[in-house]
Length: 167
Image (cartoon, rainbow, N blue to C red; front, side, top):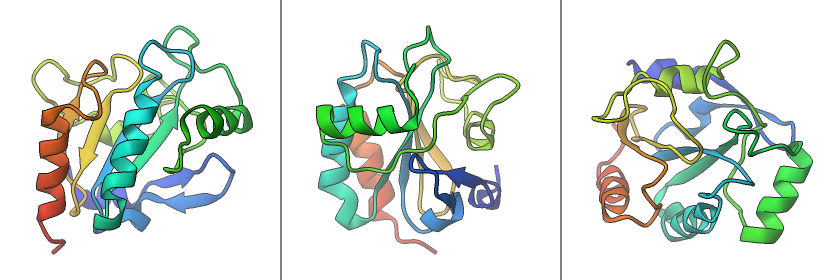
């Protein structure tokens, strides 16, 4: 996948503002599809902790609320933002709620899911699947929902991505 493919994708943030994934050029980005009523929802705390620890080094955690898995994200963007802020103290950026698979799949996930990693080929399987994009815009790691944000393999991949300077 060409990094320019990711960097050309338009994003709508949770507050309705428009951005481009290209604004993250030169920064590693951990993209996670999130949900408020999932057994993995406590991972919000771990994602926020990662963001707090590595943001100054350039890491961006980017959450995309999604309601495609058993209706576990029923809220609207405002409700989701309120829940994330008050329940988990989330300060990392959230996208507007969208689809991560199917005919209305967000273009970001159309690109991310091209990255295949062992048991995680193709489609997103559930909430809190994680994709790590390096400073060059290449997807370099993909983690199952069951892999906690503070798992050694996630930390190692993030630190490796942070250690490599942008070209």
